[in-house]
Length: 156
Image (cartoon, rainbow, N blue to C red; front, side, top):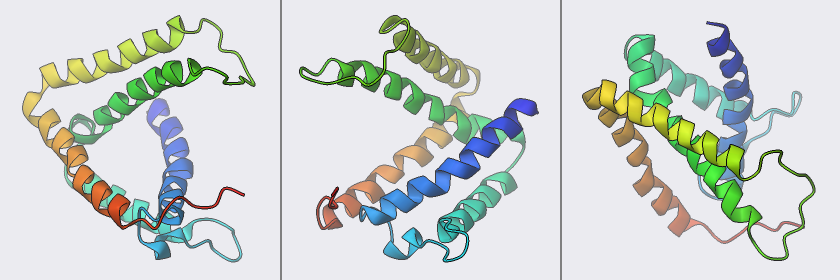
């Protein structure tokens, strides 16, 4: 329970800001990138996330939710760790910080993340495939928006 509430704080804070950045980059509806004038928060993105979370919660138990959706995040956690290793190998890259145990620790983390995914797939193949299907259903949406995108936003 403590782990769930701890993770929830991070998800509530970061999730809407991802939608905000996607809207600003032209990968979601522009109106979703609105900032509340008084609180300076991505209020529309927060409402969208609340609605989507409510839909997911209404679909079943915590176990069913974990089996269908949450385990898929570990795929991306593992890929992120591998991406870290690959990006840090770029020639001429300046590093503002060092990573203790690099590259062993990030690769061990990636291995553990993929072990979580494999364990969940073995334990409940049907449930996990529906969750993976939900994630993969986002690919055509992403490619649609990426094609529609006007170009990279100005970083200046």
